[in-house]
Length: 76
Image 1 (cartoon, rainbow, N blue to C red):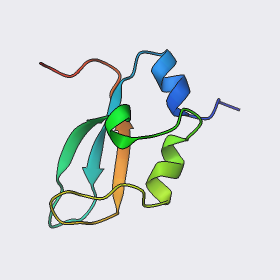
Image 2: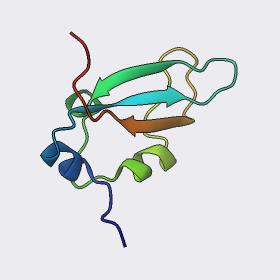
Image 3: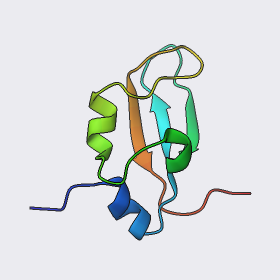
Image 4: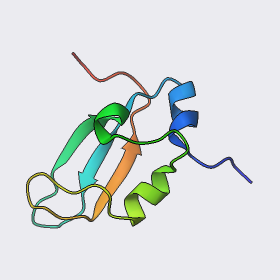
């Protein structure tokens, strides 16, 4: 069984944040957000963050978001 995708595991691999995508068909906004800005604990799982509705879209307010870890550094 593969290990759970926790924030501490991602940090140890050098992942500093994630792309958060709004799944509202009328919006489809997305943004890169760092773990620090999300205020997450190291033991928190990425899948749990999606299902608990912890994050919401800054454009339409939808809590239906998908989180995709960003494996390389963002530009800038």
